[in-house]
Length: 278
Image (cartoon, rainbow, N blue to C red; front, side, top):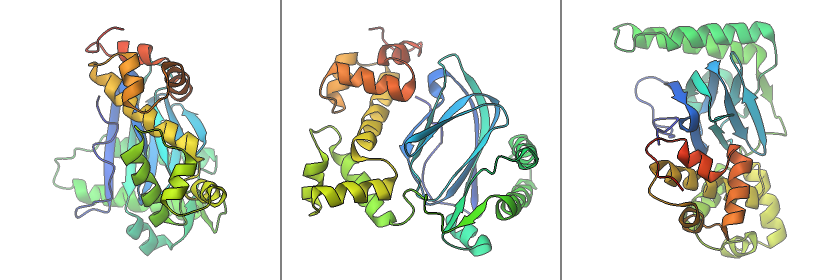
């Protein structure tokens, strides 16, 4: 499987922004559930893509764009297996954002045609830049500052109570790492609450406040993400994949996968020409 992003980290070189150009088809339009401290701006240039943030999903078409805030859980996938998607993602360093715009900010798409035109113009021009050109870093920084100008003028909110996952990144890290280590096992929010020495009720509330989704939704996201990666390799069958990734049975696996990816695991696997047939 080709990763939607080359990496999902917060390591920057000399430039406080990372650029990912996307030109993908079908089930390669996919990035597993993840989060980072950086701010992400993704713009659809052509085609379609589905973005999941917290418990919501957004089907994006040409010129649509989305802002993902610091420590906000998100993933993306195709809308249809016949989709083709071209787009660009700007991953902007959170310390850089805080230096210029301030701390504890929430960014959003204001739904303005004027803003969308400006964002689309910048996105297309950056997409078309020659990354090997001598002036590329300087041009990229000029576009990055232009984006910051748009964010501060049209897209900034302070103290927004709906900032899922932004209040306690340490808790987010501990919870997500635990599930990543144990998703193949028969875990529940009660056993996880016991591990972290919380009452089940308090743990359930803290988990939802920290990650923006409830425990079972996040666990299913993680299991399905790993299952999708295994299916894309083509060296498995549906039953093995369900058992390998912590699902209690095949029916549960198919139901969860179809809800998240819009197709059955078999259709997802068979859409990859290198995959084995069921």
